[in-house]
Length: 125
Image (cartoon, rainbow, N blue to C red; front, side, top):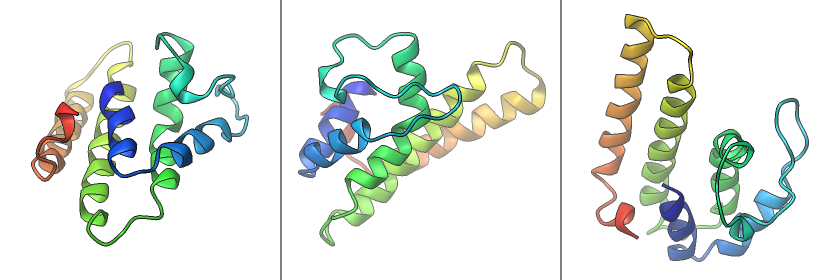
């Protein structure tokens, strides 16, 4: 997914806006302000991955606000994919699961695949 996150803004000519949004994230409880530009993180692990999950959807939305009309629909589906993956990841971090939490996770994966169908070739960037 990280490769796709790097490729999608580039494809839509929003790399600089994405990086500016990433660097501009404010401090918040349990969120560490990134001390590097998004593109400068060489290895995503631990704290960086948690921060990515907490801020990714907002950063992507802000970075790609100035889209032309041909890019709006793919962008909406891309946001749907990212949101579903972030939600799935947050739920997967629970220490234990019930039938309800498993149903949520299945729903998130279903949402991801529903939006993914409208993005041919995007995940292979």
